[in-house]
Length: 107
Image (cartoon, rainbow, N blue to C red; front, side, top):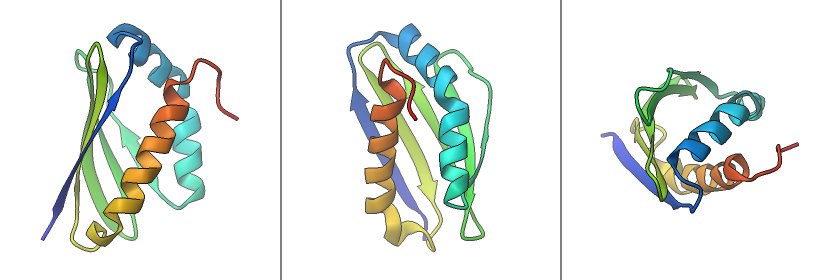
């Protein structure tokens, strides 16, 4: 059975600035994930929402990022095989979100 993961990350940057920062850091994030054998396909923005598909351990994870004026929401549906790793995935997502929203480009 699949597991639904929802993460809300508060910010005080405004939606436009968050979208700009996410755009600037998307390639960095994809490279970091690919180092962990996670392939990611990201759609273009549709208003303040962006959909993605990640492939890891032979399983596809579908999800999206929604940017509001005061928070970023990440939602994903994890296949049953990846579900047990949801705590680690949530921790990694929060770590990457903090780096992506930082004013200085990550390493």
